[in-house]
Image (cartoon, rainbow, N blue to C red; front, side):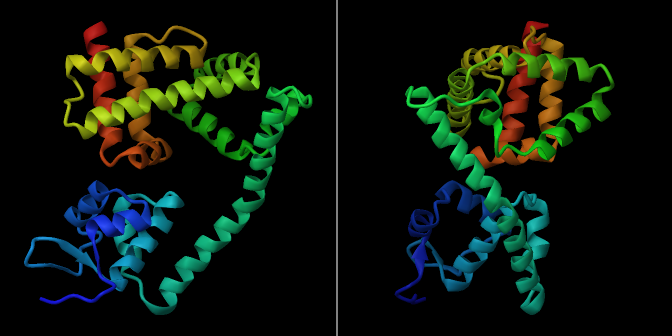
Length: 260
């Protein structure tokens, strides 16, 4: 089969879209995005239609639509397809103002850290979605009982005592831990392997610091259940790497079992 000059290999599509080759292969495996054809050389080739389909997948993923629901949305045609895109635009437009506030908060925080100006404590949190945070807290209380209120309050008190620099450093630490764990998964390391336990121990220590109390093995295993049961957590970890949500929670439970 011959192919057009504008058709792209999987590596080329990955380069222009920012999606990894591994993810494109995963989308093909689950029937979400098949290549236009496979050449005699065994390479997968993607045409304009597949590129547009990938764009729609990324719009859905960006706005939190689970992978399992995206296929049905992709089957929409004509005015229905346009309607979905316009609804995405409305959501993005609503977020634009909040993102502008977040950018301003970042700029002012950097200036504060450099000693160029003083930023009032209350201004540290401008732009963050209080509705989203309140929703998480309500979900936790609903699923884990009224005792969760005290745990939430304890964590909030610990965070409130931190400076902006300390909070940023704490999030940097979490990012380093999660990056190391995701890389272990990509290398094919089993989540219950002994080599994973050192990084998972760091993750558990980070959780204890965020909670402002010790994180028992039982509590850590419970947190793994939380990660798998709340769609926002699943989305976050699947964004780091496809399959990472399940791999991470398996690693957490294996660690908890060894410590029990």
